[in-house]
Length: 178
Length: 243
Image (tube, rainbow over all chains, first blue to last red; front, side):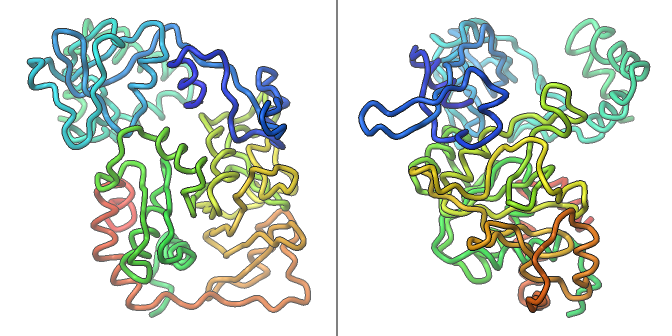
């Protein structure tokens, strides 16, 4: 998938990959095709480029120009470069001079970003490296709720459709802990 | 040291670490606390020149996430990788994607495609499974994400090396192209392993070694400095295992 995004980010229609031969991917993915290397004649598999209509990424910081700094363990920069539109959720907005990758960040230029949403704690209940850990208790609550339709509906109303905005959602989450 | 006071995961971590060689470049992907712990332990115990690339470890400083890991593997720079599976069969084919029919699955997991490239392009792959049952070790996988080896693909360099489970150490036998029993843990007999495996592990007429019990040295490194390093990557796992 990452190589397919890489092709998308470079405007190339497909890419050969080292993989998938002699696997069941070739039977379930008709868009994966066997091709011959035009130089050596060796067989590989080609996959079509991935160009998402919209990518949503979560970043540490953003600036008013639309540039962001995101987690270096993720491939958010690649995703932003491949997608037609990218929305970045950021923990905070900072001055352009303070938007520095630091020890675990990657700078993504504003030309790749279409919109920024400032939402502190926006990755909840998952983690944001260096800022807050995963909320394991909430994830368990979600897993329990997702077991059947009724409890899932209750979860959706309480946490997703009910709260007016992200801040209201965080207040409800805070209420769970106390 | 009595193995009885050990958590099965601790035994697995030690067995995994013994398979790691000094000087290797070894990578660990997502959701893999056991191999991550094994690399930390190996580095402290017998592999000081090991280069661990552990996804999520603050000491693994990369800029391009898994894309960077994959690129290294494709260029032949990863000596050792670790994978798990929801099914593994007698030929060493593995399934990380679906139980049941692909388009109407009983269980569907995310991702898995990267595993196909990794087992082909990392020099060897060690598997780990947190259970050992007939549901996991099946005669034939429902979906083949990848195979143990493939001589028909000229650019493939990687092979299925071993599989570490809570009950035994299995290995891929090159001559028969099958997954076979390599060794048992102290206190777990061959019959127990066979009863929980959905295919023959080629034990007839072969003498099967017992895994050397964990040494005091290994255990104190694991519960000491290795654990402290692991805590920075997998805090929840450490809390579960060592409270």
